[in-house]
Image (cartoon, helix red, strand yellow):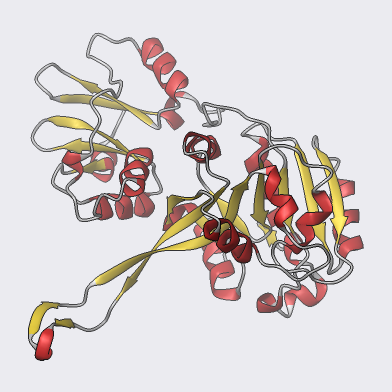
Length: 356
């Protein structure tokens, strides 16, 4: 059950904004919050926030306006076994015990009830995954003079092993690795791992950008597939991204990170003749940035020019220009680990408890 400090950590007011709730989740590294103000008001999940953002709801909106009423809670009469079964079905991080009057009697956490269990995604799927691993890793020199970027270590594993595991726990077992720089090194390392997946390599003779090499797969991949950079880890239920992609009939879904940028100065908005409209003291701006992960339909492989340097952003622009559907699925800043340069790599190591 909860201790007082644990309870305070996961609790948030119904009047808190969507943005404040998102930041709280990132800070405490949880995807579920307990909404409480003298009495139980509901549960707020990262999925609730993502759906609100997709709908275009302002990030300053109070979360009481986006709360769902169908979350499962336990009652004082519930047995521990019943609570465990409910949590197992919905993969809940925690389960509050709530009275009819809205009093919270206890909170059961997953890690306390399932010590050896992994919080796996509810829905499994098996789609081809393409990992773009052909880059030079210039921003991580001098380490990439020795190691190719996919083999950069995070603790006792390499980044590409972590990527395999992330997709593997969702049910994916078909991987295609685009290689160029230190290709034989990468192939040898992965072959010697003895992974329980089907892993095939395709090689650029020359660097072809972030999408140019995908033409080498146009006679191989015939279904919806996923593309991931080799230097990112995303802590998200990928089945939710796939569900969004399919429900909206997207040809491409871009996974975007909500990045927050504080402005150190007060900003001024003016109108006609320089008249003051508004002043904001040290605001924080939030933008969606490209995470480096995408879901694509197989027909797009025919729209990539062969043997040409071609970025995936060019493909996205082309699809948009012909009125094809390109969706954007938001994830929080804390759910995105990027090791593309030294500052970010150091941050990932520290966040995962590795001292550098």
